[in-house]
Amino acid sequence: MSSSPFLRSIQDYMRVRRYSIRTVKSYLYWIKYFIIFNDKRHPREMGGAEIEAFLTHLAVNRNVSPSTQASALNAVAFLYNKYLDQPIGNLGQFSRSTRQPKLPVVLTQSEVAALLDQLDGVQKLMASLLYGSGLRRIELLRLRLKDIDFDHLQLRIWFGKGAKHRLTTLAEELLQPLEAQQAAVEAQLAQDKLSAGFGGVWLPNALSRKYRSAVMEPGWQYLFPASKLSYEPGTSILRRHHYDESSLNKFIREAAFKSGIAKQVTSHTLRHSFATHLLQSGADIRTVQQQLGHADVKTTEIYTHVLKQGAHGVRSPLSNLT
Figure 1 (cartoon, rainbow, N blue to C red):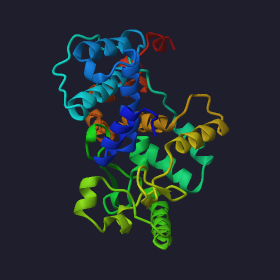
Figure 2 (figure 1 turned 30 degrees about the vertical axis):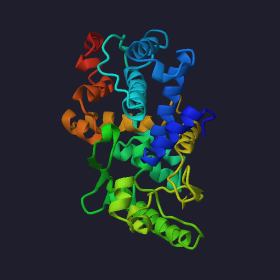
Figure 3 (figure 1 turned 180 degrees about the horizontal axis):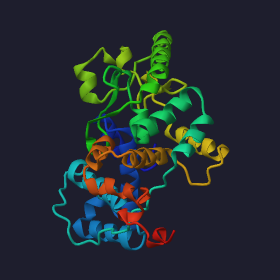
Figure 4 (figure 1 turned 120 degrees about the horizontal axis):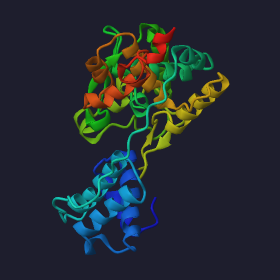
């Protein structure tokens, strides 16, 4: 909870409209930063010039990535266009971030196998899905039981990056552990229903209105639920949220360390490895693009840097000397 009455008011405004917790935190961070940057002047006293100066500061002095600058812009645009009802119009007079994206860290297949060997149970299943289906961390954690298509060996990803839906592959080897996990979630739900005040799983506002009984139905439960019940922020509704993001990254880093991998490994490294290994096996880049949910194939092309043919498919002349 923010200590500023103004920020608390924005927070309440967003919660009533069922913005996700991640979006609320992100927007409050950038709005607070914007206000501090402008010597704590009230946003109603400012406008386009101050916003452009702030965005330029992020690009020139902070050297943030284009996506980070876009997040800041989205937050400030929300502040003016939605919360204050003071439209800011077009913004074009600011320096745009042009920082080159980092090349992805990619594991070899033997390194992936070594990492997975350090895990067991639910943690191994989670890491296996990150690699085997090329999921983003939050996509994995937001999976619900109904999103597993056992018959067609695929996962349904709802509201991925850019609020896009997609289908991605599911390894046949994971069917049995997924069925076991599904049974465990259903058993946990039966226990949760006995808890006083239990309000079921969280659903986006439109879905909770359309499917009023869904919060208690097995299919809508998170595939990887949190270990404890907790109150939905700002309410007295007791729910079981999904597994913690930071805990996911922590156990993956620990597994990489134990397996002797010297590379900097995060949950996203497994997604990078999924894409690169698909390309190495001969998959078409457009297919890989669809699997990853990239809007532009240029984003997918970055993975070609580790293919056996060398950077950009060029064979080194040194290889012809032997």
